[in-house]
Amino acid sequence: MELIAVIILGIVQGITEFLPISSSGHLILARELLGMEAQNGLAFDAVLQLATGLAVVAYFWRDLVRLFKSAVSYVSGKGIDATDRTLIVAIILGTIPAVIAGLLLETKMETVFRSASLVALMLIAGSVVMAGGELVAARYARGPLTIKKGVGIGLFQCLALIPGFSRSGATISGGLLLGLTRENAARFGFLLSVPIILGSGLKKLFELETGNSIGLPLVAGSLVAFIVGLSAIHFLMRYLKTRTLWVFMWYRLALAAVVLLLVF
Image (cartoon, rainbow, N blue to C red; front, side, top):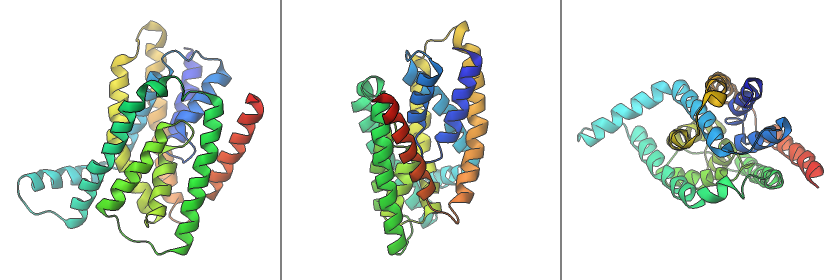
């Protein structure tokens, strides 16, 4: 892989992993536009996802350290804050559906799910879900995170296994549909993504064929994805304090239309 092309993929991954517009979908489209071979595509994408997973860890470092200490205290039989207990259990239980679905669909993710036409269709489907979340959020009161809501958002996260849907788009929309604010839905969605992104990245890292031809580009692309991803998280968390998901929905629909025109 050419160094410049991989750096471009790192930028694409860093931006699109956290904005609700689908990182895997954009990587598939970017690779086709750059004329890059699809061999080991999913594995290479997962390594870039590992870099952006580390960006989540860096951004939410204080939250993760606090939750880890609370988990240790809970296991030790000590009392912990009820909010932290709910968040810990919600993350654990919410992670299970995506783990199971990922293992069951791994083969299809390597082959069937990596087509531009499917990406376009999922961009549209994800936009419909996002629109539903915004419409519900505008009509009904918002409440705190519960374990039940956490599991529900975990089920929505499974949709992100299909390129074009978007992990953040699915979890934020799911949070809105289940009664969370945009900011709280995004925060929980990012924390929920840590086990999946890091686990998938580490698994695929050992499966990736390494060599002189991709060693340096892989490192460079990962570093770029980490830096850009950190900036994207900061932007989205600030953005969602006062704004909605509609602009991302319209972008997704426009991109889907372009892709369908090119494919058909």
